[in-house]
Length: 134
Image (tube, rainbow, N blue to C red; front, side):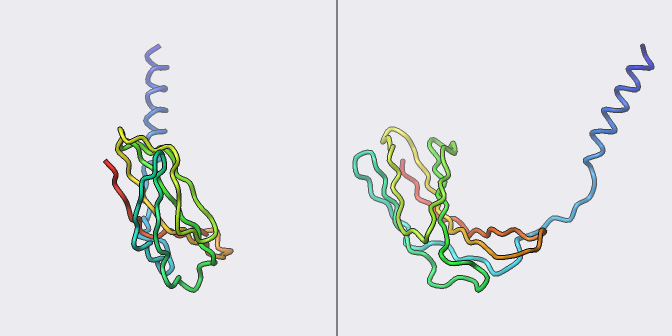
């Protein structure tokens, strides 16, 4: 019985240590970064929060136009949804606003890159801009 217990412990330790090896960490994705949205504003109309922004005037040469925009919606500090709106949008309407709750909206430009390199992501994000509604 002791022998089986020792074997099980040895196997568990070996499995845990198997994932411990040195990996090189990328500091950032390759390519020119995408600029963030500017002039991010909001308006509340009943149960709707209407977000508006301006897209960057220029994009890196390798970004396919039109870009998309990602909107992460946090309610009471919990991520509730993260829609991605295509075709270069400059507005988004969130339709289930509850004034009794706290909201954070994080808006990022999402660009696609045409690459055949399997080690390079085809998606590039701008830094996020945000609105807080308490």
